[in-house]
Image (tube, rainbow, N blue to C red):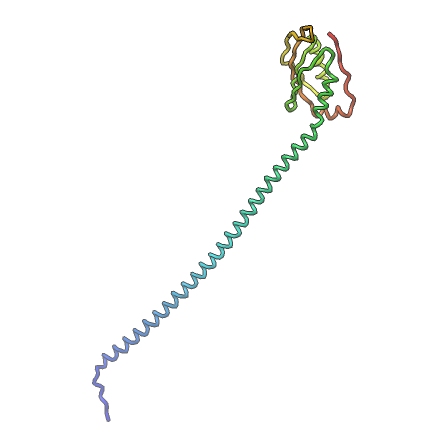
Length: 202
């Protein structure tokens, strides 16, 4: 028995092509979706990895900041200790300087000189007092110049004043002078004998 297909041949071909197109479009859509998912996953992985690196760097930076702060604190403590050490060394080296100063003044002050005040500021000493005459002040300055502990006496002022001593009033020369301490010479002076005092009466 012969069968005759009465359907249009072209219509079936179009239908078959349409089905193929739909199938290919679906396949392309699925592949595109898979590609998008894979790219998104890769990018998310890179982002997560970079965020992990950033978190690690932040943690290390915070740790380094703490170490830097600790180093700064230790440096400040070291500077403070060094400053204290220098002060202590300075005090130890000069602790007997006042005693030597008064001993030296007692040796170098000639008769007829009465000291009223002795004030030390660093290496500078200010001496005020009374003298029976101007010549005794000159003798005191020569003695101080020759002293191994002191140098460069400088007379600031000298004037005649009336001083009441007990019931009597005497006319004396009031003087004010500065003298410098020679610390290096003072160390050498401790090893030798003190120089003889020049005591010249006016």
